[in-house]
Amino acid sequence: MDYHDGEHVVYPPYGVGMVTGVAKKKFAGTTEKCLGIQSGQRHRSLFIPIHRLEKVRLRKVMSKSTATRVISQLKTRARYDVSQSHKDRLKHYQVMFNTGEPMEMAAVARDLARLSKKQELSMEEEGLCRESIGMLSHEIAISRNKETKAVRDNIEKLLYR
Image 1 (cartoon, helix red, strand yellow):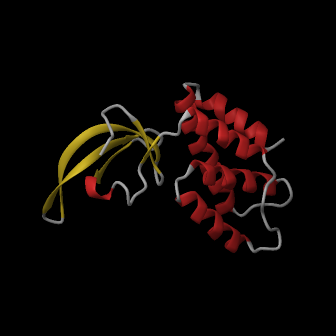
Image 2 (tube, rainbow, N blue to C red; image 1 turned 90 degrees about the vertical axis):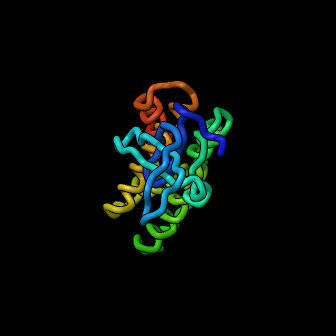
């Protein structure tokens, strides 16, 4: 385990958080060593058993070079299928989003934002698009040491141009 107190990490279901340390917690009668994370956007404290960190896809915040690649991905041509039902499209994008990988989340945000200019999205698609943009904005802001709102505004300008 190479996470340190005060370090920013990404836990895909909750977004960006900060490591608060290692603590022993009881689960179903057994005590386990857990990594504590303070989730910034949802204001929750999470404790993830150390042996499950890889399985839950916990990772460090993207590097500046990855942030640059993500911004480039947002500028590329969208790849969506308008003939596909919104349910099938949503399943496809949820799988991509749930990987927690920045490039996958960028593709979700790009495709759904551009599709929204051609047709109305379902509430779920719209929510997934907003969540992707929000998580990417927060993570890029941390990696580039910028304000989240400014990064989000920049991303939205790219996507909705």
